[in-house]
Length: 206
Image 1 (cartoon, rainbow, N blue to C red):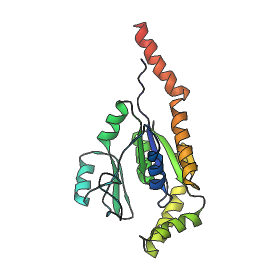
Image 2 (cartoon, rainbow, N blue to C red; image 1 turned 180 degrees about the vertical axis):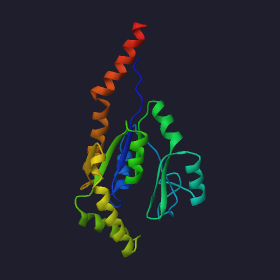
Image 3 (cartoon, rainbow, N blue to C red; image 1 turned 90 degrees about the vertical axis):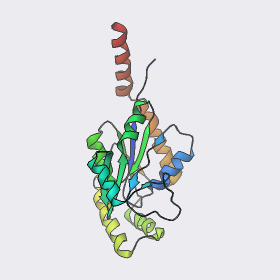
C-alpha cells in the first residue's frame, strides 16, 4: 500500500484581505484538511475564542517559545507576535494528513525557508480600495493604523512572486472553490505520485 505523507498548505496575504473568513468558509465544508491554529500576543477581539481563532499568549511566553525553537515560524506584525507550533505541524504531516496554515506574509516566507516543499497560496484583494474598505469596516483600527496596514499591504502584494498560487478574494465561495481545487491538484501532481511509486518499487526489488 502506498502511504502518502500530508501536504502543508499555507494561505497568506495582506491584513484585511479576508484570510480568516476564507479559512472559516473552507472548514465549514467537508474537508480532510487539519487546521493549525496560530499563536499570537495580540489581544482577543470580540467574538474570538482561545484555541479556536488563536492560542493567545503573553509576550514573555511567546519569546520563551522562540528561544526553545518550538515554532515553525514567527513574525512581529504591527506590534504583536504571530507564530505556528512546530510539533503539531510535523506530526500531522507524518501521519498522512494535510495541514492548513493561515498566517501573515512574514510568517509564510519563513515557512517557505524552513519547509520549501509546502504549497503557498497568496490571497489577494480585488484592489487596494476594497482592501481599505474592509480594514475600515472592521472598526477595530485607528486611522493611523489603517494607513500603516495599507502601506504594509502594498509591500506584501509585491512579494507575490514567492508563492505558488494566487487567489483573488472577490467572492468568498469562489475563493474557497479555488483553494479546494489547488488541494486536489497538488495531490495529483506527477512529482508527488511518481516519488511514492518509486519507493514502493525499490522495496519490491529488495
